[in-house]
Length: 439
Ligand code: SF4
Image 1 (cartoon, rainbow, N blue to C red):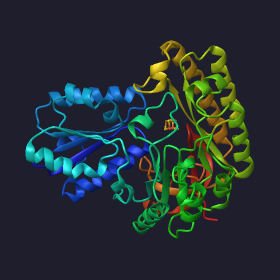
Image 2 (cartoon, protein in one colour):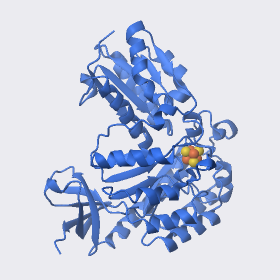
Image 3 (cartoon, rainbow, N blue to C red):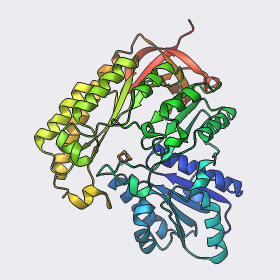
Image 4 (cartoon, rainbow, N blue to C red):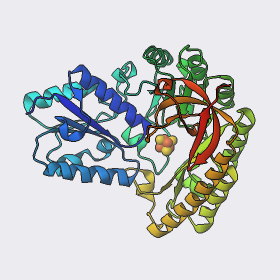
């Protein structure tokens, strides 16, 4: 067995996975390993996988196939949601995979490595229950401007198309005090923006009413931390968002006025089949309330097209709702059946790929045109931008306003990590382009 000096983690999927990769990287660094720039140089490679979409899984399996044909002996580990759903398949099919580590065993990583190195065995650790050690583990973060903090893990909602309740287990809210401690720890590291993460942040605390603290309480408390400039959160569930939360977003100066609020479908019959727990009318009522309470709020969404039995009429209900709500950000997906889910077991995937493609294209066309027009309205305004980094072309700095629109402008890289007022002059694709305001 190789002795390990370097590691590389490839992360697929959501921000929770990004955070989990940081937790694993932190432990490997404590073990004395150094992170490699690319996977070819690393002694240890971990693939932190996602199983939300079929495509991500197929990419992973393709990658494992390629690596197994390479000569250099490496230690390969697989982490993330896919291993919770398909660990047997991975171990059987890919002999070069040395270990599998589940979403509830992240802090076990070094023990797993010790065991496989000592005993020269293949190992799989995939507990279904939340790992308590994660509660108080504060990972070292890669980015020194922005950091994610998990406030809940797992999910109790069982939307019929979604694997998360099976791969990440039941919802668990971290303690209020630990979250505040972690935000303070990050502030001490110089972090300016905190992203509070959960599959459903709005239900924070509802799994443990004894705590008597809910998501809006967290926002008010983190807002008081000097040094933290911005607070974001992801994802809100339309059935669980409360009026108290909307007022917290309005009242807390550092909380950004962006709410990711997945609609998924505009037909009540499909919403019911998805087990989303709201009707279109209830969703619209909450959108109106968000817009009434929070000035200039930006609303994002996820949409799934081609859910089993979705008719043309029902798709058009989604399209009309999408048009009417006039989202500021949208992620549109074609339905793909995921093993273990209720939709996989109960419904035939009966909408053809062609129809799914057409529906997706129709929504995307509307979205792309609409977003361009919407962004043009920012020309002539001044946006408060947290400068995150150099833009790809290096001539510009990039950052985001509080609504989450991307802004680029010319400036010295010493401005990274500061908040700048930027006068918007033009737009390109989904980006605002401006100049620093000196007034
Ligand atoms: S709310 Fe629904 S879609 Fe979101 S993670 Fe939970 S089950 Fe999945």
